[in-house]
Length: 230
Image (cartoon, rainbow, N blue to C red; front, side, top):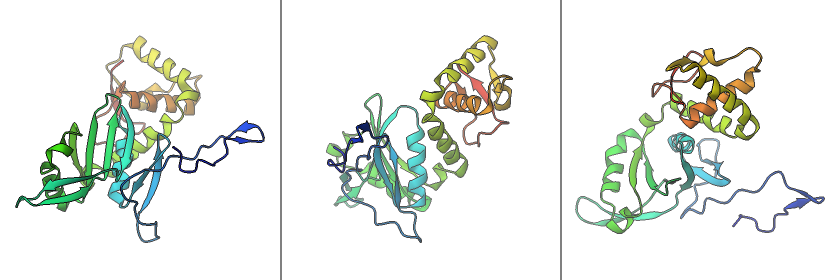
């Protein structure tokens, strides 16, 4: 259900080019954005994803860029957990992530100084809540360095262009298969006769699809070397 069911679907008899995204439908909303904080939201798969810290914003970007992720829900569920004294408390999960396989991952986003505290919450989750998830993850600023976030943002940007550049993606993949290279550098994939924006999009799409794999934790640029898996 869209957030505004009365939104028109036609303008002068023509379909709208923009469709209002679904609300995040979480158990709570982040406080309104202010100049002095990083509260806000983005859209993934036509659904609002909220964040209320710089680390949450980075974590959301990285989660959305993972292969196979079909849904990211923010502040989606409140769970109960035992503390060290056996007392039950409540905690709202920052993100719940669903994959194509149907697996669900619960993500708690904290500062590194509070990693142990967040891990204790996930470890102490009551069985009825634990059974809803296949994986429990704590993410801190150390898990989302700027280079990883920047790579993720590029993947998301070029993913949106896949439909328009699908032919160029196939052409590049065919080239890599024909040359049977085990390793290739980013700049080596530029080919005379193919315009640079089209080839750049194709390279990033093959990174996203897993055909080009760089060493983890490095910023991808034109000097990056990849392992080719076609």
